[in-house]
Length: 314
Image 1 (tube, one colour):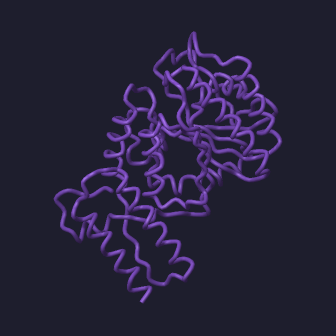
Image 2 (image 1 turned 120 degrees about the vertical axis):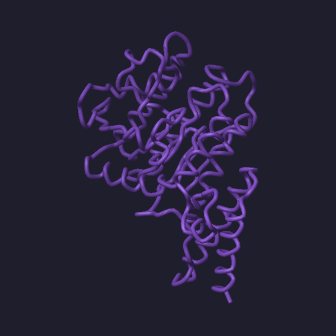
Image 3 (image 1 turned 180 degrees about the vertical axis):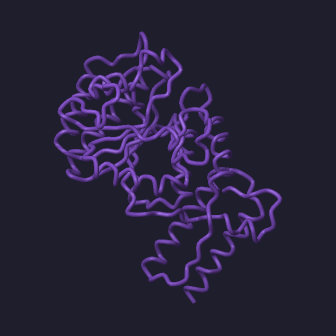
């Protein structure tokens, strides 16, 4: 949890936020992970806990321990990719006319994620978009990959177009799991073939008539941050040999720029209070899971919120 070093406690308390601003109902999040990804996944999980993301909205498929070798373009990696696609197809089929977010688990979320997803959803409905992605900001043959999207983050509308689209991506991936030659590979290769990017078009239109777009670069961090620290909703730890070190480094940079502000509990109904208590517990669990030394101002904020809970209950 971020604090501003050298400030008086009163000033620090004003910039601590446990419950980030929300402008609507947050969306379900679907992800697939495995035991060998445990350290990386801990950032994904703890970041959502720290934000107080509703637990019933978080859906994780755990594949357990996958056989080695592990890593980029290995058989275990491809197996996990294929399972991700299967889960996306299944989710779409079981939740028609609803929206959800699918992510890789080498992603961590920041306070802006809570309100930006509401803005993204509003934008999708206004423009009739079926899917939105983050742009692939690769440094590997970028001139040949104009318009490519990253497969690690997607907000989808469950409908007949997206179901047909992702079924086709899954079928093509299983028939030809591309893992050699020039990138992109596996699902990202087939995904982008199906999206059929056209320079300058909005909205883009891909196979089966899917309408799609990308979120602005400043709303997410791809690999190492440049100037997105103040505005990013999430970080995708790509383009690195040490994901854990990168996730930790970026988290600390963002926490200094996107502090969490404390909110009182007065005026809440019983159900609202119960929800806030659960969020506070999740936030504390997320901080504990980070295995960092807590600053005195963090402890003070926790004590104050717990006291408000006790006062409210009494």
